[in-house]
Image (cartoon, one colour):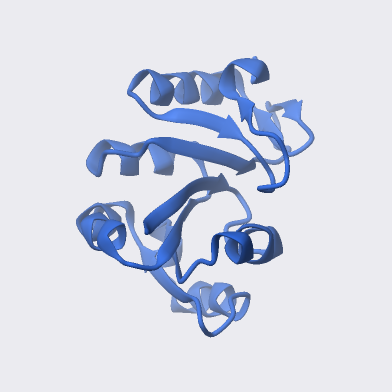
Length: 157
């Protein structure tokens, strides 16, 4: 099955990912790609607490994730790859293509961001980064849960 969902969500591992996506997709693992979290045992322990014991969690920097991507993609279990921001997903996609589709699951309010959906706030530069990701061959959609309709990037303009 391999990686069935590439998701950008600034909350990383939380109920919506574990229950909302994990259960319907029957995930066996989550790959959390974040340089800071990969270097912090304490943060890893916190994120691991939010995941049922039957779901394995991998923590990796972007560089390590690019090296591990073939292994994750060939894993027989369905998996989710998570990043907290657009730049990290773009860096991963550049180092470890292909990434056919990226799901914007939660990019919340910060100074300079404007609402595009109730769960997606973006600056103009972030939107341009997502457009560049699409131009590179990766479809970008916003979808908080699998039961919701996927919203194409163009609709977030």
